Image 1: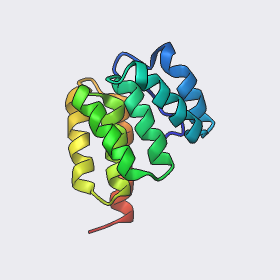
Image 2 (image 1 turned 30 degrees about the vertical axis):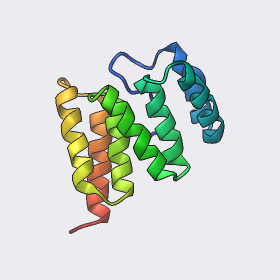
Image 3 (image 1 turned 135 degrees about the horizontal axis):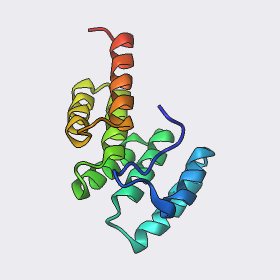
Length: 134
């Protein structure tokens, strides 16, 4: 799993996300959450911001909160690559392999010619299976 959280949309992270991404790169998740919350006041339906907010909460092991924000991001943009990847990774943390595989299937369709998000989630699922043989 990358330490750096991408905005995750197919159009790229954009310059607006860079300040938040820098905080996340430095693992300053609490500060990132504070600033993302403020940004969402002006733009509450921004799936990229919601994805980064969820990612930050997930890294602080606030899984219920992260799940809520990933789901909201995906309600707004069902094919959001970053949110699908990171939600799949959260499901693996929660021991929900089948749900992680569902996110992988969404990414498989969203990434017609392949993408990093698909590759990273696929690798995480393979690692999970190696560590948790059924």
